[in-house]
Image (cartoon, rainbow, N blue to C red; front, side):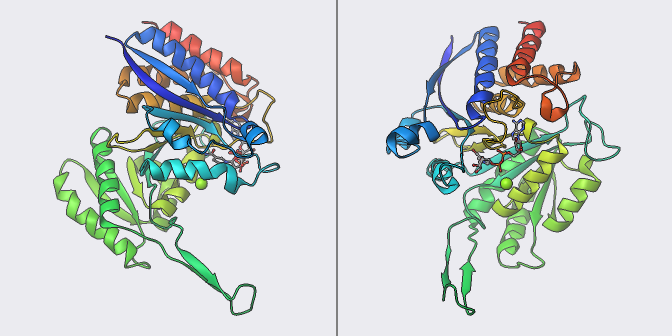
Length: 357
Ligand code: NAI
Ligand code: MG
């Protein structure tokens, strides 16, 4: 029986619509090849154009529109020359929080055929996943400023870490490690921040015995960043707080070939709400409208969406097709080539086709 899945597509601004068009092309083909599922797409014309007509980037009821969907596929939002980022990006923050998308999952994998920025490292040496706690920690909006503008000005910003929040993100990491290479590293900084990361350390210690098949340890985040550059091959699953995850995922992005390739999720693992899948990159106004953006980050995000929707063979087809296209030399400009956005999409579709039924 064919199952139908409702997908909200929010292409957004700048190169968002350009890369999403290619992701949809690939999804359409994979759906035809698999024959076991159907994606019912709802295209959402939100963003800068919507703002020009309505004075806001999304309608007031945008969460109600998204809630019944099985997943959200996002391109990128933002056009700072026209609208402050605080306004264009605000709906994304609301989506992540309202739909309790507490696990931000960002794989960092150097694909075959691509050169690493690290001397001597091959594809296979760089294959780790950073799971960033996406709902609390250092990024809760908690603080204030006193005596503004005076020499005695004071700023206070307090992080918030909960046992529940730490436990659920670590369990997510352990479960993922079980499906990978059975190794989990937690980022900490309990040497200098003993309250917050002391709690992280304790929760890790309490959970580890429940996962005897996963080798787990913790590293101070500064050392972890250094070790990722020296020995990326030692890392499999990395779990980090919101701030540390932010730092680690930028490093992961560059180690795995750059923004044009890096996919991301904002996951609600319990499936109580739709999760959101998006490339790590933004709307890239500097190259928007030229048809030269690399669509692979968006295409791999669509593949992660299919995995989340329990369509692993469809997800795998896409990953394999991307790898084959790159191995055959397909390159957009950011990778040193000359392919246009749509030509890269076409190359990946051809690889899907030749891998066949
Ligand atoms: P950006 O990621 O849009 O671009 C950074 C640099 O990488 C640019 O030179 C761009 O041309 C290049 N680049 C990005 N994606 C690429 C791709 N697929 N192919 C080839 N080159 C690519 O970051 P930037 O310039 O800091 O931000 C631009 C706008 O995007 C801002 O409004 C920002 O707030 C927004 N943004 C939105 C995000 C989202 O929608 N989740 C995430 C990050 C930024
Ligand atoms: Mg960042």
